[in-house]
Length: 326
Image (cartoon, rainbow, N blue to C red; front, side, top):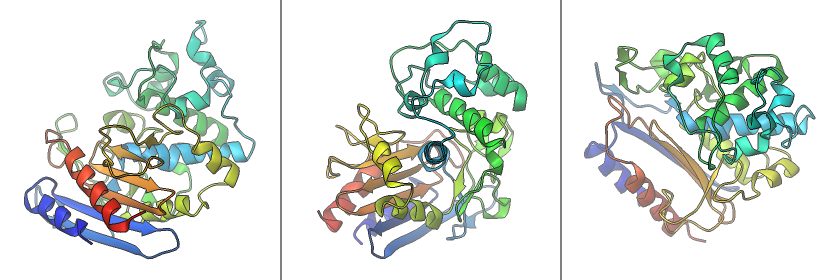
């Protein structure tokens, strides 16, 4: 594929230390490619198909969205349930609009919750979960929100009666990957070490390593398996898939839709959707054209202070769209 040249150049020019790229077609074969390094420092380590990437915010659609919709299918949740129905201790001394925010609004990032806060500086573990529940979060204009997905993670733990790290996962995924098979991320100033096999996101780490917004690790093969299931309509029930694909502004539930200047490229179809993650990962699904691709990188290794990956992602998206065709 012509995309190979783009990716080989990105590694050779140091845009990313290493990458895994894969393309799947509905009912067809997959194309995969692994290039560069799983780790630059302290010693170079070649990237292999067995390596698991820190999927960062891909946790939101590939884990949290899927698990919420599975719980809806089983009658444990409804998308229009207010948050307080499942977290009754939420702001228990205050009459706050957050209590009435629906699970749907959290999934679609329409709740008005803030995007992010340095919660990891306030505590860890169960104490931090209680801080998350008792903080009087301000509600403003709708924005992409990690906070909303942290709360969804707590809802899932409550209805399943187990921590997120104990949820069963498809083959190729883990919340606790073996260190020797994990792709390195940042030389973290806060933790004082190169992160390998532990989640890069500080808030997810403080919450125990697995959270609704981040914490999932995956191989390229595992991610492509999920994308193929989405393409073929077997990821969830037909009713749940239909609900997932219902537009909510410039988003679906969890997923981003194509819009002007989108990272997925201008040649993506109008029904294309996808998601990115801070560590340097991205997936894109073309339901009408019948293909999907994943680009997994360790762009934050050894530092997060690097140029945007949007130009590379746009180039990949346009190259694939042009070659695969309508």
